Length: 150
Image (tube, rainbow, N blue to C red):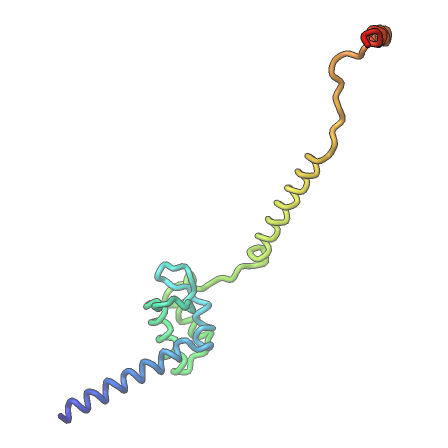
């Protein structure tokens, strides 16, 4: 009976320990570091991802980050350690000025092109002459003939 009680107590303590590290793994300090590292599971997100079931790779790395922080490593030291282990490809590179402004510039240019096309199509066109000019004598004779019809 004593072994059953101690096994039950150990199981409860393990659950409590996992629950405590789960909150530590989602802390702003860990997510700040994790947001600078790419996840290697193929999702294309950073390690601060909040996928519903939880990405096992992100969880393992966040657990590693918690242990590194507890050992006294700074954010930069943790990032340097990951770069040393995985290479520079693990770092998330934020978009520069062109990456942020690019879609807005493209949208503005497209809107300008549409407006110029609409303006060009709405402009009244001058009527082109339809054939050779009519001789004034012929025109006078036509007028005289049509006047007699009524």
